[in-house]
Every structure is written in C-alpha cells, then in structure tokens.
Image 1 (spheres, one colour):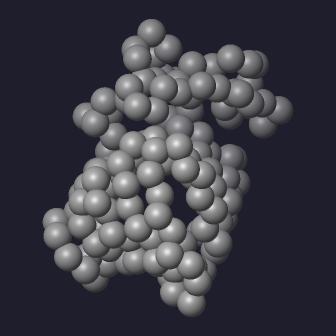
Image 2 (cartoon, helix red, strand yellow):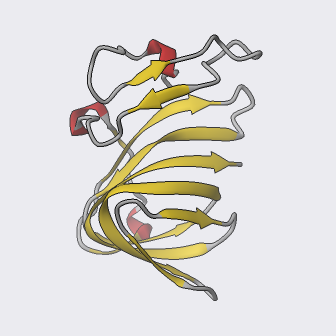
Length: 143
C-alpha cells in the first residue's frame, strides 16, 4: 500500500502531500489526488471471485492511497468495467468520478450513480452492481 507521500507529486493523477505527517507518522493527514488523471496502468488488478460475476466480463482495478495503522480506515481509487457483479459491502462513502452504474441493495433502495454522485453503503449490505459504463470512484471505507 502506497502512502500519498510516496507518490510522485509531479506526475498528473498522483497524490500530493500538503501537510506534515499525521501523529501516527504513517501518512500525511491531508493530501490531494487528481482521480480522473490517474492512468489506468497505475491501478492494480483486483481479481473478482467468479461467484460474484452475474454477467459480462467485468474487471476491477484500484489503488489504495492511504490506510490507517490499524487497517480499519482505507482511502483509495476503485474502478470496474461493464458487467453485473454482487458484493457484500463495508461501511463506505464514495464519490463517482466517471461512469455509471445501478446498485441494487437487497431489501433496500436501487441507487443510480454517475459522475459527481456521493453514495453511502452500509456494512453488510448485499448488493448487485450493474455497471453500464466503466465506473471510477474515490472512496473511504471504515472497517
């Protein structure tokens, strides 16, 4: 996992530290990253369990930008290509940067998300994601 201070601030799409290290000393307390400019080849493949794939051939990639020392807070970038997948969610807040998807929450709402939308998912939510256009999001997960 790469802390923002380890990323090259001169490269578009990478994080830039804008504050001293946090009290824990593991990462800057504040940073910025240009999510749309982060090149696809800078994201790491995150293999899907074949049991999660309902249809299509979706590919998931991502990059962790920061993780708390205890591993219970994670911030990063996540991307998925078109297809339909299922998941069981963590507590998550994300903002869609590009793409579109329909997220069906078992026993809950159907969420239509696209660029600029902020979404909150609850721990334990069982979801089905229908990705219409490659979706890229910036997220914060609390475990």
